[in-house]
Amino acid sequence: MYLRFVRPIKLNHMAARSGFFTAAYELRDQNPDPLTSLRLEKHLAWFRENLHAPAKFTRSKSKGAWRVDDTKGLSWFKDTATEMLAQAHDLAALLNECGHPIEVLRSDRIGYIVYADLHQVIAEPFSDTPT
Image 1 (cartoon, helix red, strand yellow):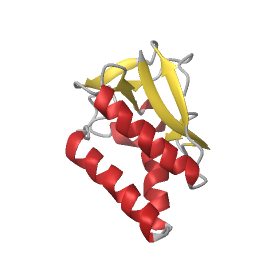
Image 2 (spheres, rainbow, N blue to C red):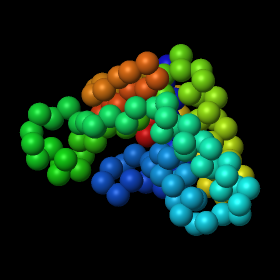
Image 3 (cartoon, one colour):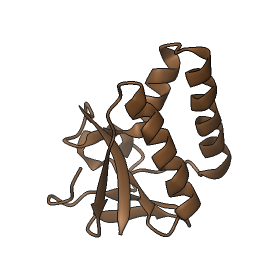
């Protein structure tokens, strides 16, 4: 099982919803109160330290693949990544408190795997993948 933390806003180039890291960075840029800012930065720093950011989000081998809007992969957490998921749920709760609603999608059919590590996978979604 895989989990994806999303908000109700669609990505410009896909039918998928935006992930919760986008919401976190938007909240940071809104200069929230000092306590919220401190809590938010604590979570973001933890993820920067512990979650690898893959270089590739598409299966294409083409050098111009980044220009093709409908071939982007989506990030999902593995359900076995318990510490990562605990942090993700905490960050989602903070975002919800601050008016950025976050929903957790769960699926076993996430698409074509582009990248995987101990904590996450990047997958280009199937047509029936919840996004």
